[in-house]
Length: 475
Image (tube, rainbow, N blue to C red; front, side, top):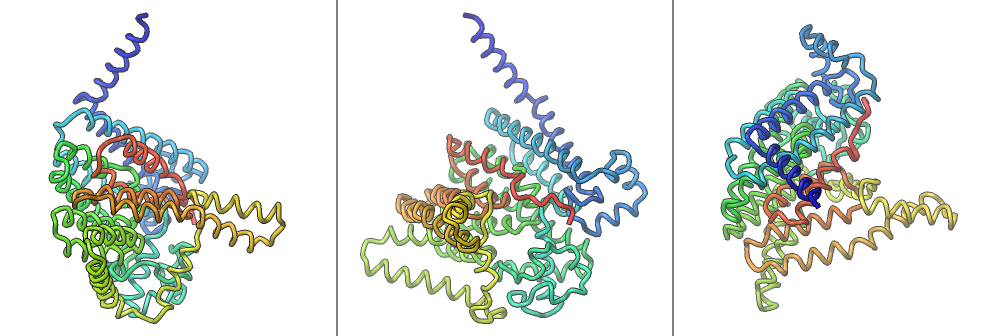
């Protein structure tokens, strides 16, 4: 009868050891060590972990850095070897992050300074290494260059038009002949960064990734101050959950993805809204839509919430017309320099047709398409189209129901973070296309809500998607 007691005592002793001050220092040192390993892996000339860029050439010309890579065998490592090592490092990184979650759940003595210190160190390291996970940052640099240096319209002109540009070789094949699929706020900001960085590819990489590091730090601060108002007792824990998350750091900052920038505006809008500042929050949320269009689902949720607070039908119609007019005015003003009619959105509309196996909708679409093709013997193109349509028809009602009900159940401004969380979560669960950096849309919203089973599962499953859809091919 003493065995269960012994196991419980042993488990408690381990937890106490892991969450002690020594355990905290061990977690910090392990985290830094793993990110240094990722940085070294990214410099391997194979281009598996860090996407090939002029940074690799500069490293090879540096005798000291080149000898370090030789010492660790990275200069001669094969693609398979680098894949295996990177997967092992990612698993260890996830375990270390879980360790940090355990520590901050049990301790309340680590404040904003402790969280920011490690975050700034890791952001600095991730900014100066080659792009991680995907090559999207190169296409973003190119779109900014098209507008800022070539004085052309990136919503109509593709990087392929400037095939002689030295940046062209680094752009992903998928984006070479695709116009920009983001909003004008992203485009203006990319132009600004392109002007700052000039023509140098390395400078552009660091400036673009440095900008995402800046937005990540801004998100940390907004989460901290928002929780100070919403739930002071969860402030330290919630801020750390966002700040040290491996997807936010390795993909958001390390990959230079603009999802971090979009979420800065979403979080700022939420902060303003929970403070009762309706119109500033509404306008900032509109601007987030014009970074990456997906946040329009949150704008719709906000409008539904606002209209549900009005009693008369005439008042709701009047308010809806006003919100729509303000949104369209912002869209028109910002799109005006790039406007070319419906063709302005051609690339964006084509992008909506994407499916992959990392998503629920993509898997269901594949199952339906296989049935149509191999059991009903329909042509492959017809089977894929029907599979995609049926998948969307099956899953869309769940998302629309959440989009309608979640805002209507919010009773006050303070309930909006939970509303945004539910809408985003159900969208990610029902979408037909998912990439690991999409989790950045949900992550800060998890930080703002209570630490219940839904938060734990959302954080665990979402963070564990880090290997899905990542580009582990050199070219």
